[in-house]
Image (cartoon, rainbow, N blue to C red; front, side):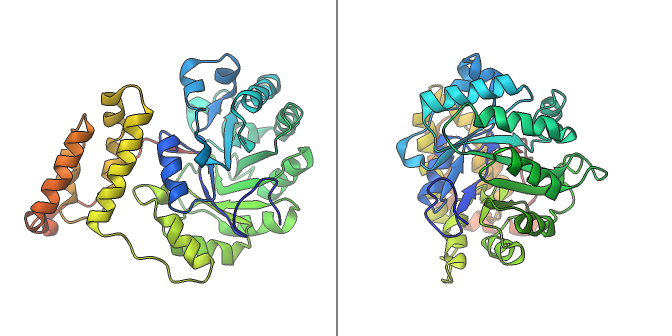
Length: 345
C-alpha cells in the first residue's frame, strides 16, 4: 500500500516522535543509520499558532531530514487548523501528523493526545480541520483506546480514515496502560485488515528482530521504532537488513559506539545555542549509549556530571584506555536502565 509521501522502501522504518529525544540531531543521526522517515517531537497547536519561541524553535529541520512529518496536538479544531497552515506555509514538511496517542496527564487533562479518544466525533472534527488547512498529507498516531472499556482500535482507525487521514500509526496500548504491560500486536493486524490506508505498527520494538517479527505477525505497511532507538541508532540499519532478507550488520564495537555518540553530541552542540545546556540535556543519551557495557554504572555516573563536549571525549578516552579496570567491575555493576523522563508519542 503506497504512502502519500516518499518513503524509500516497500516497508519503511520510522523514527517515532518522542519528547526530548527526537530532536533534529537525533533525527539526522537515525536517518544516516537507515531510518526512512522521521517525525518531530509533538508540538502544541496553541504554541505554534501563537508563535511561541520555544515551540517554533523545535520546528527547525534540515534538508537531509526529509521525508519528515511535523506532529501537532490539541483539542481545538480551529487552533489545530491554524497550526497546520502555519507549519505548511513556513516550514514545508512532507506531512502533518496529529497526535492522538500521548498519555501524559498534563496533555490529556486538556483533552489533547489520547484524551481525544474519549470523543471520536472530536477526533474526526480535528482531522477534518487540519486536512482542510493544508495541502500536505495528514496522518494520525493513535492508541487502542482511552481505557480497557473503550478499547476499540479498529473503530477508532476507521473513523480516522473516514475523516481524511492518509496513514495511521497504532501503538496498541490504551491510555491507562501508559507504557506498562505489552503492546497487543494482534490489534495492529486487525487495523491493517480493516483500513485501506497505510498502517504503521508501533510498540515494543526493542531489537531489529522485533521489527521483522512485527511485520511478519501484523502485515503492517511500516514499522515505527521508539525507545528501541535509544543509544542504538544503528538499529535501523540492522532492521532494514532483516526486512530485506540480508544478514544484519553486527552491533558496533565500543570504539565505534563511542564514535557515534560523539558524532551525535557534536551535532547537538552545534544545533543548540546554549552549549552548556545542550551538554547537560545530552546526558540522557550518553547513559543510553553506555548501556550494557562493562562497568557501565561507573561510566554513566561520570557522564551524568558533564557540562561540555570536551569532558565527554575525555571520559570516553579514559574508558578505552583503562578498560580492564571497568571489566573488573562487571560482576558488581548495576546494569539497570537510566530513568526515562522522555515520553514516546
